[in-house]
Length: 216
Image 1 (cartoon, rainbow, N blue to C red):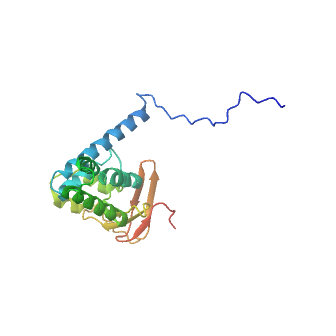
Image 2 (cartoon, rainbow, N blue to C red):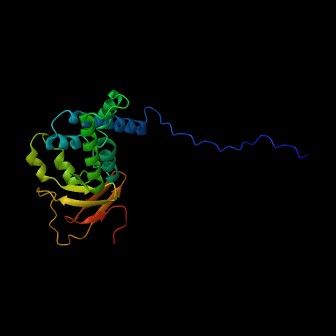
Image 3 (cartoon, helix red, strand yellow):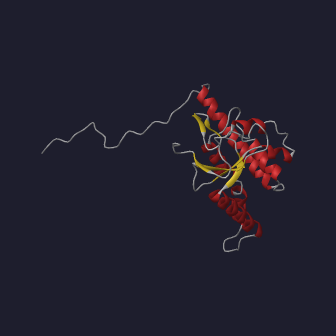
């Protein structure tokens, strides 16, 4: 009878989770991002208790601005999908917990589900937001007083969708001279991709651009 093999384990070693020193730069960045996401989540929930005005909508994305620079397209999707669209979850959970087993849904619960479904579908087909990936737009947006709605017309807007997350459509070019592109070669796209995000210039209004693919 062959001797049994010892000292070997059939299980694969588990991958250790990265741990950063609490005073390191990386730990500080992660902490700031976590605090910012929590604040945005609270803003979205508080908005549910107020009127659904455009000012409240724009204020939410104003507070989504990064401390410096611009957002990447991926970051913008994350804010819409995991913070903005989750604003109904807390109240829905409360309503469901209060409902007795076998009882029909309350009018409030049905209304919340309807609003959540409508905005989720809007995000699937094309959700219009201020272009927080565009340097000139972000710089202008930082100067907003969070009150004057007419100021928002100066900014550039894009449509993003969950069905095609790497594509954007310029829905509104903005009225400020710093965001209007008057170059003749308007079909040329200059892109500067770095760790901070994707910067896009010269995009034509109404055209769809796939940021996830190399440009010809």
